Every structure is written in C-alpha cells, then in structure tokens.
Length: 183
Image (cartoon, rainbow, N blue to C red; front, side, top):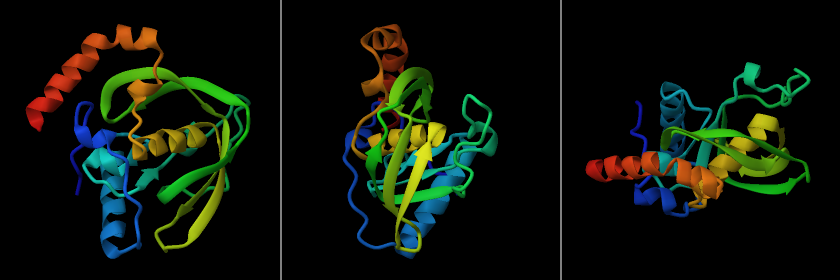
C-alpha cells in the first residue's frame, strides 16, 4: 500500500522523530509501506515524517547505476539495497565534501545544490533489531544525510543558499499554500 507524501508546509516535517523502542511487526510493515511509496514516487530515500509518522526511521535504495563515482566505479558494492535504518546516527565522516543537486519527495520538482560529507560512518538498528554499522560514500552517503536531516526536522530548504531560496520563493510559497489546503 502506498502512503501519502507530506509536502513542505506540513508541520510534521519540522517534528523531531521519536526513538523506536522495539522493532515490531508494525515497524516492519511501516518499512515495507515506506519502500513501496518511495518506489512509486521514484525516490531514493524516504523518512517516516514524510509519510506522516514520527518513528525515527527511514528507507534508502540507491540503484547500482547511480552508485558510481567520477571514475565510473561502483562506490558501495558491498552494501545490499534496500536499506531500512532505524534510530540511525552518523558516527564519523571524512573532511571531503561533495556539492551536488538534491531533490526531495516533500518538495516536488524543486532541486538545490547541497554540500554534504562525501563519506560517512553510520550506525543503525536493522529490521532484525540488531545494531549495525556501515561505511557509505557518494550518493548513498548523501541520501543517508538527507534522510537523517528529516528525522531532525531539517528540510531541503534549510540547506539551500539564500540566493536559491529567493529564486525558488514563488514555488515554495505555492507549495505551502497547496499543502495547507490539504491539511
């Protein structure tokens, strides 16, 4: 079952997510629905807040052909997709940064260049309830940082330059207005 996406202007997107105490069948079902929704909407990541929930979890699936560096080599071949990250945290990162375009299902048809760490270490609980670690590079690292922002109430608009916010001002205002009509 596909879930409705909460768009910019919905107050739940600014709420800090609540820790998941136990990985229950309800959490597993939510993860499955979030993946279905993400695929339907053609995204690479989706946080619980984006579907109106407050659990501290998100899903990510980077297609193999998108998981390549500038040299054309796959960056995260050892990481099996899709990922469900419950109670995630970034535990380390390199100083190297990447600047690139980001979109967001909560900001349809809006893109902005965002600076992110190029490589990160993360820790999370998986669907089996086990604490797990991973090292991610490139687009996967970007997606994890983006979705983790959602869990902390930080949105794409908060990462945009002032100039980009001004340039997108009309689109952002229309999106807030449309969102308020659906609440």
